[in-house]
Image 1 (cartoon, rainbow, N blue to C red):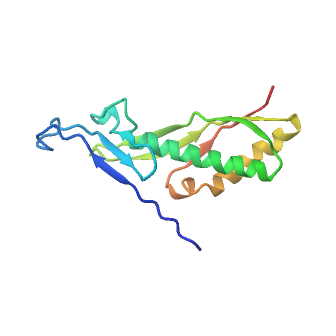
Image 2 (image 1 turned 45 degrees about the vertical axis):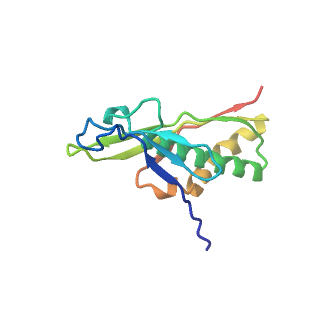
Image 3 (image 1 turned 135 degrees about the horizontal axis):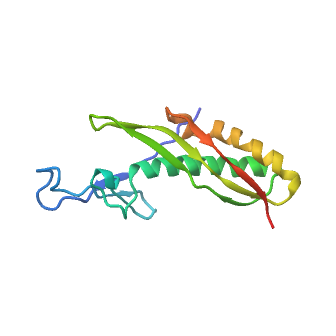
Length: 156
């Protein structure tokens, strides 16, 4: 079986001159970069002294699950004769913080709204979510449930 390797750089950019001399003396800002791709401005969640204008790791995890599911879904749809004309997801994730400051995700719910070209495709389109979920590399790698509440529409 082939292995796929993913390399990138995460560089902290939040040193205000005092380093981490105190919890409120530095920013949580960092940049995620990879050759040939635009930089991704990131920080921690605002609840953890982060910059709300930047992506945080928790959002990126939820986005990864959503994106992975969508890409598998679209591929499975194309292979099974379902013509998808639109796809938008509004996923949500629940992370529980512990008293010691640690935490973990307890669930993510994907809520894709899928438009298909013909009414005859709706039933098959709805069954493809289970297959996409079972194939998604990211969903298969996490230790919490990834739920799906899809809606299928017929394109106007």
